[in-house]
Amino acid sequence: MKIVVVLVVLLAGGIVSDAAQAPTTAGKAAMKVCSLKVPGMTCAGCEAAVKIAAKKIDGVTDVTVSYNKAAAEVTYDPAKTTPDAIAKVIREKTGYKAEASRPGK
Image (cartoon, rainbow, N blue to C red):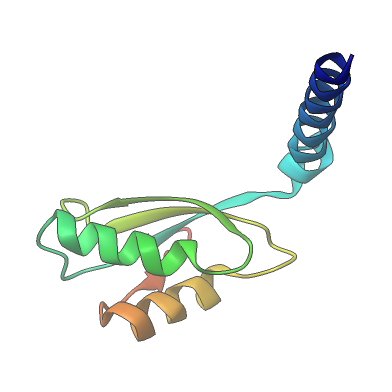
């Protein structure tokens, strides 16, 4: 009987925690993607440094960096941060001259 109770509790706990962690449609709709120019990167280590710095920012959920393109694509919550704030953190933490790309530039 104790084993059955433990299994039921474990299974129920897993279901509840999975539901609590599932992203909502409204949350996904609020996310935006920005492009950043990040000149000066020369290797995968440079990419990793930029990615780590950006991922530590509250509101940033995903980062893709390419040293070949001297760019980063950042998915973020605009209620928590901005492209300019993300670029500033990258500049301060890595030393690369990151800047938010503007349409038409």
